[in-house]
Length: 172
Image 1 (cartoon, rainbow, N blue to C red):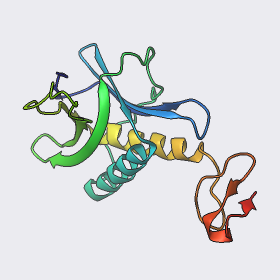
Image 2: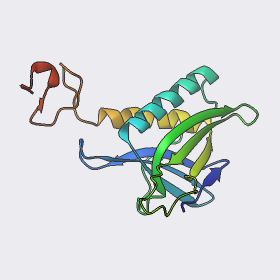
Image 3: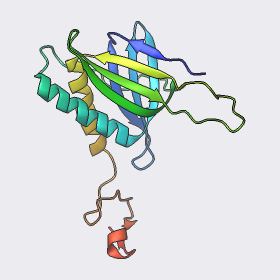
Image 4: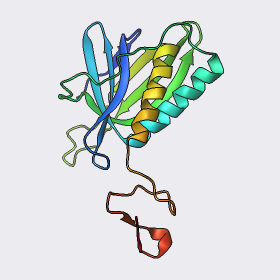
């Protein structure tokens, strides 16, 4: 059974990727009181969370403090705390904290070893500064990916790709 976490005021919150475009593995990291959590996630989860956090900061107003500058993933990335299935976002007005809820990917095993168990979760309350820095970092990560096909908007490998909108022809 995986462990759940509740971070009130993390001193570190970021995202990053390891590997070559098209083969990258994405992570979200948070640290509080010296305990580092590393969650494996999908590229689209990072994109969506970054976009959403950027929108929340825009609605709430610009952060008053400086943005975190140290946003690189902290090594070692293994062991991964767990793999993220779902991400939720909320706002705690009393504490002026943006709440990021991560839920573990939970597949019931064939032999029923995990029946009755609930997936683990992590609630991470971040500042506006951390949210804005994460949004910027996510945008930069997306720019570092594979170029998009001008016809179908799908990702293209260096040699092009078989485009579904061009009747299976290779687009470069």
